[in-house]
Length: 205
Image (cartoon, rainbow, N blue to C red; front, top):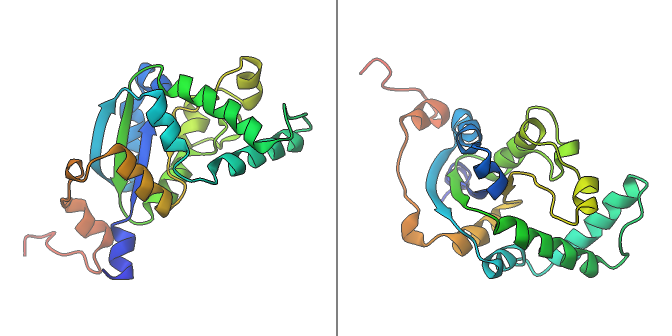
């Protein structure tokens, strides 16, 4: 497979979380990715178990350490005192909240395909914290929440969606949530217009 083919066929994993489902935002969120030209190659509604959610977030053995360190740094950047200086202790609390949050209702799992799919989806989604996400992003436009509010209520921040952070992470997450036969290879007419070296067939020739 050529490098160009790999880029055009890049896939990313995406979850519409329980709060977004309950607020009727599935169509609005999906429309963002369709409009930019990504292709939906797998989708299903699911009810996650705590065990499956924990396995999802710990697919990367470094996730706990990295997440804890980023969380501590975020507190300090805002002039706040973190609940702990131990990254693993911080992440244990984060994971506990995530399991409650992600199992509180149905979720919609998706696989999107297209050039630079991972980075494009992350750009459209916005930052992890809705409060600091840019206007125009999903989290910036559709939700008001912050780490401060979530901490005060002892819960996970409600940020509507999850998106893979890298191509490798996407590969692992897709395998965790989908069987190979649930992912469909097909062509969209718009792919010829958007990605082909020359636009052909417009006039039926």
